[in-house]
Length: 438
Ligand code: PMP
Image (cartoon, rainbow, N blue to C red; front, top):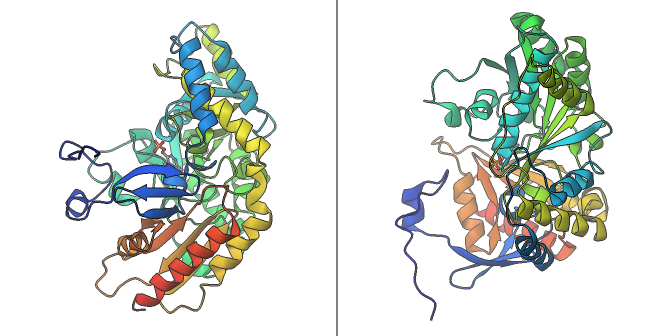
């Protein structure tokens, strides 16, 4: 008999604890595309955990690589000392990054990758003598983690509320995208026109004060909102014009979610910095990274050597050897199984067609998708209470794990997904959606 464990001492992140206690959803086992609840119910994981388990659950070779690494070198300080597994992993990672982003700064999470990228951007501006450039620009509805830098550039109001003045940051508007492009397949139009907002914001604040712009190429936690055509390219041009660092937060969009290693390649726009986490170890162990252009690295590090700027930044576990071993094994799986390209292959198309087949169900007001990420948005209930969590619970009761945000359900299945899994996702969502009053 398995020992019954109490969860009284556990403070659950981001969750309505009262609801969880009334109706606990406990997952103690997972394998491949499936998780299993504590009573043994099989749950199809349409979310890859929290957009992270890209290679599918319980990949033994990742665990075995970690065990071998513990036996070889479990830990060594990343300050002043280095180790081969860290060097090897960094070299392997830059085989996947866009041309020119050849430097890797390791962190432990997406939130830390964001903080690190913002600080690198500020250090870079300072090192170039741009001493008045310190303002940051993010987007409405953006999620960049929960630390103070990420909250400052983030655009999800409930996350920011009550945490003081934060860093000096402004936000590009994002909210019209959904309404203007309901049910559009592929990328919506109006991107170039929309990106001009950045020019206006920079003019408003003064180019001499703006240091960096950070965007998720596709906003994940904000509701899977796609960039309209040409939007990211035009942001790049405007940043170049005003000597502003462009950061892509690819914590979700990286590692094959869209059908390329990174959204930067998919949308053919090269940012100055990319933040990464989640799929970098397929969720098995916490690890994040910032990928930086060579020029940024050279400028920050060289000027530090001259003593004009120091970049005192890093973590006890930056480039943890065991995490690097997990990451290398993850890259082996991605390459051997061709997982990073599946989003733009046959299965990506099947997923897209399945999702868009839900159009016409009364309660659904929009469907969005790119590669192996998708969202189904439901009509806002008359009482104003978001319905997403209710849908999540209904899906769970039918053996499907989805993510809820507001009135939207997000889908980001492991990249090992097959057609039968897509069918199960779509059939379940259709059944649930038909039970929801429009
Ligand atoms: N950036 C983005 C785009 C994210 O989606 C997330 C997490 N969902 C983060 C940053 C923060 O990552 P973490 O939870 O690993 O700190």
